[in-house]
Length: 424
Image 1 (tube, one colour):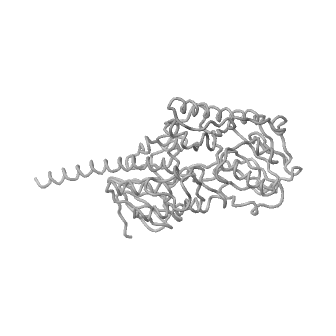
Image 2 (image 1 turned 30 degrees about the vertical axis):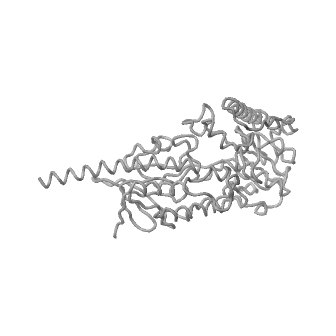
Image 3 (image 1 turned 120 degrees about the horizontal axis):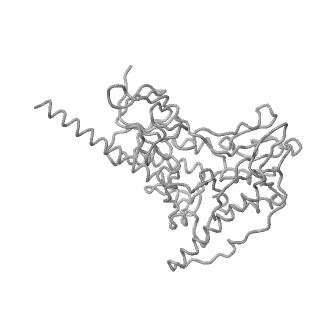
């Protein structure tokens, strides 16, 4: 069986893989990108129909190309985002091979490099970049039995309200996905319960600037580690309908019922933690803290940005917050569907190398693995807060490509020195 050889193999053809290809090319590193589906496949097949990007087009893009349809301050649709990466890969002549699944990566014995088994044959590579991103395996907590008579799907499998059976819906998780899906279902006439945990809720915009801009000028995108106790805190933000600040009180006023964090299920009833008011208050505090920092920045720099007192108005708590539901009989509530907006887990089972800790998390420094020749890209907080965002992954890819290029130079020196010794 013939074995294809390449210097660097990139696994994954999403935003991370495309960014990696651009920087490897700039460094003169021969490489190949393998994608088991299509370029940016998850944007097409694991997002709901009406999804738009959560960041404005001027911010959530690569430096080398603007979005062709959506203006700078708009929020491109999921299809436009996917098309963007296809066009970008074409613009940089990225060597992407679609429809090829990587099944295993193992280190060669007694010689450098790795042996890679794919659905299209064997490949040998000196370096391997895992650019599969953070959204690999949908997580559904094992609370409600499969035979409970309720449709259960992950948010990645949700497409539109017509997909669900008649009846009410429980959405578990109030990050960006959960909030937007719950809002869409309620607007479509569904009765919706939304389970709200700890979250941040920044303003969509403040004093004429999007929150992405504020996080940039305030240095928050460059934070290198999450704050204490914030590792599992979601962010509630939306680009829907031109972008809007998430307001849980407003959602309740529209008819959506808020509950606390989902705790357990037994005998047809779901129980919730008595933490709803605390979680809402935490989100309010996060909002106000960012507004305070923004106001201080404006004053310190003498910027001519209009004041916006309305952004600080907090309405009264709705009844579902002051009198929280702690137990809900799903049948009595008419709930026929549960959507789990509960995030994803990583799956590196194909990467059979010593690059992970006891919890299966990559051991690395800014994407450079403790296992020589293995690299990661697209990890949350890989180098800073912005690492798993479109623009952030582009900058992380530059660092990883530089490290790969540097290692190639060392190996090239070794090979040249060895030849000189033999010739002598």
